[in-house]
Structures are given as structure tokens and as C-alpha cells.
Image (cartoon, rainbow, N blue to C red; front, side, top):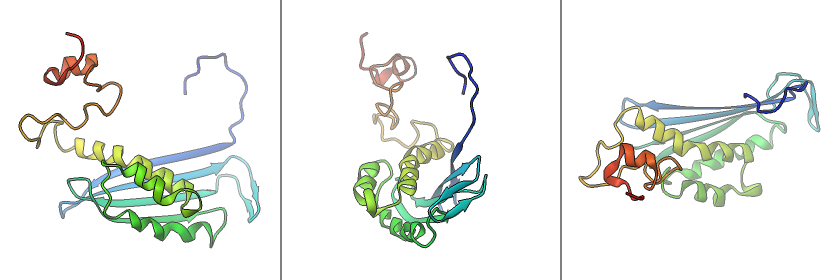
Amino acid sequence: MPSSVPPVTRTRLHTRRIALEGWKRSDGLWDIEARLTDTKDHDYAIASGVRPRGEPVHDMAVRVTIDSDFNIVAAEADSLAVPYPGDCDSIAPAYAKIVGLNLVRGFRRSVGEMFDGVRGCSHITELLASLPTAAIQTFASEARDTEGLEPGAKPFQLDRCHALDTGSDTVRRYYPRWYRGEP
């Protein structure tokens, strides 16, 4: 990341990578996949043993299958590398409980309630929080932002972020019909 402060000598200790991918399936459904990996730049001693430099301490993956209304019809989680094998990875099947939730209607709140604290894995739960926007971006690859709307319906993305506030200059320029700011 570019820095606004003068450079100083630094030593990287930790890397977390989060990747999300969206897939259109031949059966008309969509898969959204997320993966998180944590690695250290040094041998890392934890209670269960030493993780060699570069070997994942955490490697978790989630896949949800959704319909075109963002309803989750299938879900699975997997813990491929964990600090406490046999314990950390035992919670992954619990994440099938998100089947039936909608990714864009209260999803993050519901996930927080379902998997808070010891009822979940903080890393898998963190991955779930990224799924709604990844799904929206996946759908955006397929259709314009106003396609498929009922006549007169406000585009989905408006009022969902700072730039697309219906009082913003962005909305005034690109979605003038929905602009609600100063004339």
C-alpha cells in the first residue's frame, strides 16, 4: 500500500489473503466461493506445535449456492488448515445452517447471531460477511444495474454505499431520476 508517511524499515510477520469468486452454473444457480489463508514469515510456535514459515496456520473455505433472488440453497464450509486439528475444523458443518437465508436481506446480522463467540469459527464467520457484495458483483457481471427491475423500481445498488447515496453527485449524474439532493 502506498504510504503517506516517510518510509521506515519494516519486517513482514503475517499475511492474510482473502479471495472470493463468483460462478454461474449451468443449472441457473450461482456459486459464491470464499477462501481465507493466514501464513507467517517465520516458524510459528503455537500450543499444538510449530508451523513452519509459509505453511498456513489457517486455510478456510466457504461455498454458497444461491438462486437469482440471492436465497442460499446450499452451503458448505471447510477448514483445510487449522491451529488445533480435530477441534477448530469440527465446527465447519454447522455453517450449513445458513441455507434458507438471503444474502442481501439481513444476512450479516443473522450470521452474527448464529455464529457469535463459541458457536462458530471467527475466520469462517468473517468470510461469510464478504459474500453479499461478492454475489452482487457476480450478478453485475451478467446484467446492467437496471435490468429486470419492475418499471419505476429504484436500482438495487442505490443507497447501499456512500457514493450511491441518492443525495450524492454520483446519483445526480448517473441516475438523475433517483436523485434526492439539492437541485
